[in-house]
Length: 117
Image (cartoon, rainbow, N blue to C red; front, top):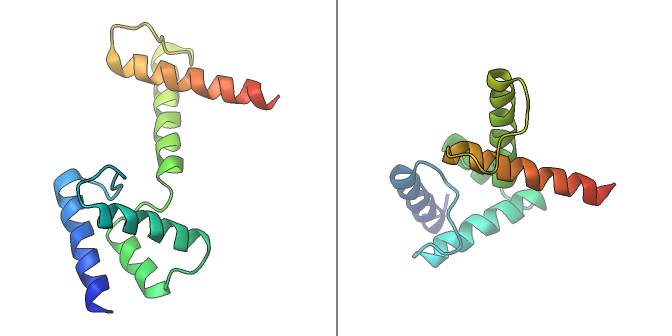
């Protein structure tokens, strides 16, 4: 592995140690690290990422598909909500901020489905 790659991996690990994930936002202070994460995901998507780098990233828990991951997290929250409440329609006006956020997500998903019909 090149020295530059090793340094980038170390920066990514430091980010993960501080924030608990590898989803470096584009607005992050270290713009190079933010661009690196975007580039790595693109390389994976277009199958140009070197296998040893992909393996190293998997080993540190790098999320190549953060939107899919977040969708699955929200989906599982809806399932849990259904088990507790007997329905899958969390209120967008709830006093509970978590239920409100989940209700907003469910509403957006319904709108997307209706748009595709």
